[in-house]
Image 1 (cartoon, one colour):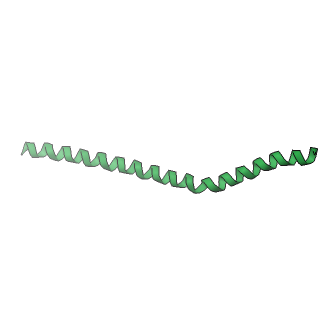
Image 2 (cartoon, helix red, strand yellow):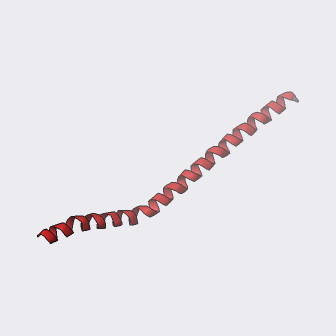
Image 3 (tube, rainbow, N blue to C red):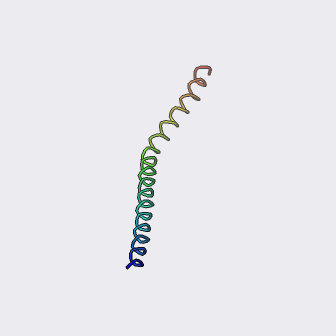
Length: 62
């Protein structure tokens, strides 16, 4: 019976390790999804600001 207990402890440890890694992967995927969702609007806003900062002085100083 002692051998069975050791095997169950080992299996429980492996299951806990897999569960922990799955949680990390899920959190990483959520973070990546959030960044990608905000990426396009952020890029467009940055592009517009860059164009404004470049074009306004050119048009003013002419």
